[in-house]
Image (cartoon, rainbow, N blue to C red):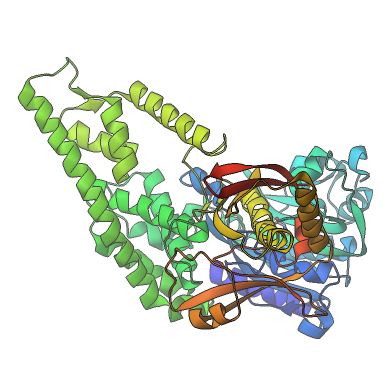
Length: 604
Ligand code: SER
């Protein structure tokens, strides 16, 4: 059975069992606290909490979807037998329509009858007293009733079978997972059935640590959220040893030249799919957020092209095949075909220029060494030089090694590592112990974060910074002008022009005003408008900077009274409601330079 057929059967099955099929949402989620869509349930979050009405929007309390998903946390694992960045997630969801009995019965019937699979075993939640969630005896009884023998019902803990919450908070609950066998005889988790019984007003880390003081609350109406990775299901249905022999990958891998090893072929194919889908959803390569993720994927493939002399038309052909494979089901892929191609070409032109400069510097260095006769016994260039080339021109260790080997050279790897550490320490010291200059997934210049969790925190701090500026102006007068700001997951640092020290009393009332604004749960609105109009509205901005004709204006407004608390020109990201910030406190006020004060504040 082909993947295309499996997708169709999944949606058909659930339509025939009282669900509305809902199209995939974009890879760029509405929720600004999440970088990319990682699960099918994300677009349905408001229906679980009762903020939105499923009957009104879908005509049913039950939905099913095939969701485009992306997990940045897996980028480094791609190349092994089962990790991917982009993947498709089949899911059925219920917002009070049904619960455990139906959810488990549907999954069992779909896998065993529709797909003709045998279930190897299932898992259930063992319970955890510390958060007040008991063992999932209901699920065990339901599985037993369906004929799964007791020894094939395995109990697991929080790490394996408790899902959510995503982002800065939301629905979560115990899960039951289903395992089936692939072509290599391995048991693969195919389906994750989540029982959203709870609501947690904090991140997964806070839930795990148990020290945030926040409690799991019961959702008034429990819900169901299931997720089944299409690639894995196809693997167990087609009985292939890995996902890469399924029809979802086979035709792509065939297009790649033989001189690429297996790991690189998988990376190439995975990244090509991810590029196509990200670009079709509007992402463009850049140095921040999703754009940075896209750029990393593209550049990795381009390094392969360079090193293994793969002509550009190979990636073009792979992309062409992807458009052909997916364009019917995901119309945006067909619609954006030209943009996908041109975005890849432009990025390649840009990157190759830098890469070529780096390579020519490296060749010059080798030449100089040869001529000076200053060759140590192993024809080595120093780790310091190698690190410099790495930092300045993006010469990855692969590229360095490959070229050096061709010239009969090597580089001092121990020294290279030392340089890397030194570099990390320097930037760390410069950025208050936070970032090694590596692995940032968000870097707007103003906001920096290394993980999705940190993106959420700096996003809250960012909106808090807008509140802080407004509060400073209320207390110290309208002459307060922003001179700079810098936001890390630890704190926000805000510099502003002001001629004297701010008194402790003033600081207290500034903090109070910000926390009141958080409590009032103002709405954060973004409107794109011509610069002149923003200026007329009195939106705050740096006078130093040059702005484009169209700008984004973020206003923090009271949804009932329309009161505007703050209005600034800004690139985002921001929370949707100030309540998400939950509270801040000012930790320090000091002089930054002549006539400029500096304030640091943290989240409560
Ligand atoms: N949200 C759960 C997951 O991603 C089930 O859909 O696994």
